[in-house]
Image (cartoon, rainbow, N blue to C red; front, side):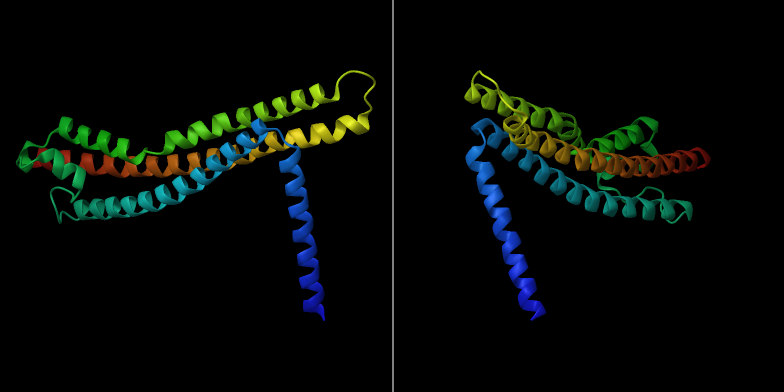
Length: 208
């Protein structure tokens, strides 16, 4: 009995939500719908970039920490790093200097920060895109109402519906900015780990 009541309640809520959603679609202007679709793409891109970059940076940081441990125990002279091996390009280990190691760090930083600029753009532009949709919705609604005495009961639903676009913009910006800061911290930790390896390599080369 309880499960049946719960199922009926769930069906009722789903029906109400669909009716509200359909009413919003039929009453909104094309510009507002475009804005909401745009912000939906923003939100999807935000989560996709964060999941992908978070996983790849974690694997990369674990690898660099392992290389750092190997250098500390003098198990290797040069870390087994793909970017560093490419820079060496069949050169002798003794030819490593601060310039080449600086190139390694710069290229690693460039690769690690790919995608972060997209999160930065989303976090900074999403609220303005939502605000643009709100302004257009209000202007369209007022143009349809025309002149004369307009009561608050007529204006309130229009404003509340128009503010949905602004809410969507803020909703898209919050995770984008939060994920940007989290990934930026991971990139910083990666840079610190690589810099420690560079210091160990240069110190080892100085004493050889």
